[in-house]
Length: 109
Image (cartoon, one colour):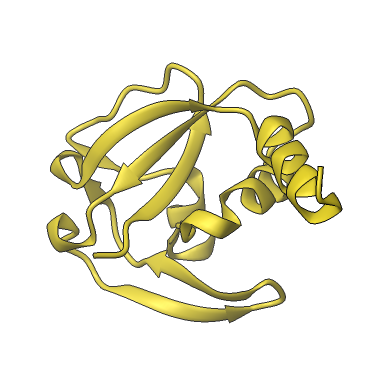
């Protein structure tokens, strides 16, 4: 199974139905695949933001999820509020740490 991910500011509680501002303004909830989470953090949050990464079980999502063509490649978008039971894990996420790990791996160190 391929989990989906969503980033929120640290400490954001998982409500019964999660409807971020993007749902009202854009018509969908931004989701990511694992390799794109750090890029999403850089794109959508100010540098230094303290974030949590929600791991989402797509089998528990009860709204349509569409792979949209984006400048970063295909990205999943949920077209409706997410039910709390789809969030199976919440973990602190530091995009700088992830990006540093990727640079270290690319450099062979």
